Amino acid sequence: RGPARLPLRRLRSAAADGPVGPAVAPLLAVHRSACPGGDEAELLRGYEVAERLHRGQLRKSGAPYITHPLAVAMILAGMGMDTTTLVAALLHDTVEDTPYTLGELRADFGEEVAVLVDGVTKLDGSRWGERAEAETFRKIVLAAAADLRVLVIKLSDRLHNLRTLRYRPAHKRAPYAKASQELLVPFAERLGIHVLKREMDDLAFAARAPEAHAATDRAVRAALRRADAVFAPAVARIRDALAEHGVRARVQIRPSHLYAVHVSSGGDLAGLRPCEAARLLVLVDGEERDCYIALGAVHAALHPVAGQVRDHIAMPKDNMYRSLHTRVISPDGDPFDVIVRSEAMHPVAEYGIVAHIRQARDDAATADAVAGRRDLAWLSRLLAWQSNAPSADFLDGLRTDLAAGHLAAFTPDGRAVPLPEGATALDFAYALDPGTGDRCIGAVVNGRLAPMSVQVRTGNVVEVLTDPAGSPSEDWLDFAVTVPARMHIRRSLALRRAEEAADAGRRTLVRALAQRRLDLLAAEARGDSLAVARDLGYGEIDQMYGALAAGALGLDDLVARFTRL
View 1 (spheres, rainbow, N blue to C red):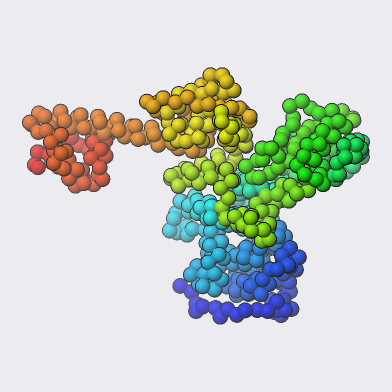
View 2: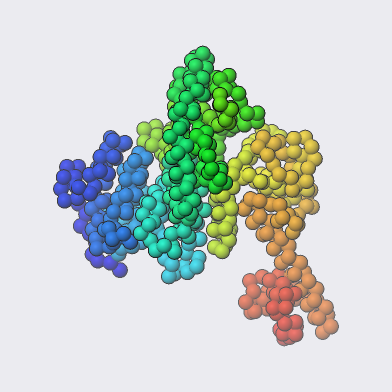
């Protein structure tokens, strides 16, 4: 496979004005601005190798293929990612689409780059068949557990493909966009990279429903033209209240992205108001406590809507997002949303894990941001069940897991248990421990007895009641929501059914052998039963007995084998 190894040479930074300069110069400029200490020579070397390997290949648009990895690297550079990530982005399709091997890449660019490229390389469809897509995503998840930059590269790769989706055949655009919204956009949200999520959402929306996208775009543009004037009285009151409370802060009008407006409006865009197309963002120049003072100032300036305050500072989201959310009534009587966060919280609110990875370059205390963060509860949950899921079930389970919203319930001793929206006390039990889930018989929610089917709400205190003799039942699948709970229940039910079948098959064989004055227990003790099972291709005798009960194995043939022993 492949030609002789490419002669790789170290390029000096000044090579930007050489043959590769015009194409790669913008990438170098952005990276230099975001990472002044970045290794430009290594970035140039990565570009040169990628350009040589992809030379002659074209995109669907007719552009040279190198424009794609270069664009992916530019997206990552714009977010301030490190040199290693950008080099991996430039090379991310080389192992998949050229004769270049992973071993050659590792030798040329080192283990770190090789791990990132391998993580985003799709599995060979000719070898994996229908399992290729599911197993590729499983591979990405496992690679991300070791280094989250794998997912960041994959998301940037998908963003550029969505930007150029118009060059794909028309019948392929909507399915590709649908898959992106179901599997990739949720990953962007779970990593807190909202700058990617918003654009990916809108591009996928445009491909899946072009007319609805165009209508939403027109309505939002019209609404935002009036936003400054409509929000002005509320902004003035908030600024005065912040000054009275001694809080320094900036107040900004924050437009919502198109897909969010489409979903929240249900597609009914007639007379869309500015407060439905935007919200206010209060960026506090201060500490956490100043955010709470700012929230009080907002409520002093404008009447708050009861029950609409959400504190994501005291209880951050799964994606590390921290802000205070509230809903207030404008001087004109329109309700609208206000977000309060500190200037220090803002980068994480926009860039999520990328902000932590950027900090890791300068602060040894945050170096673990590059590796899989176990404080990302959703990733821990995903890793807990994914290895046991068959390929056929993995993608469906992944969609379900990623599509769910977020809530946090608590154990009586104060331990927070993150769950998706709609989760039940049964899901809570399995989230604590699979053994607890299997043996649960009821729950106490906020001091009151409740069935395991009761839905859990944010802030609920849940105590799980168990019985050592308890076990899952079929009807649990009617109200188990989370993927781990459903997998454990199915596994327990399947094990029980297998045990029952094995017991039934054994009883049948005992009776048949007894008629011939043969003792099955004695045959088992001598190892004869296991020998017969292995001879028939079964690893365990219970599998043979189960096959007998299921009719997959003939009784007469089995008895004959025991008779000949």
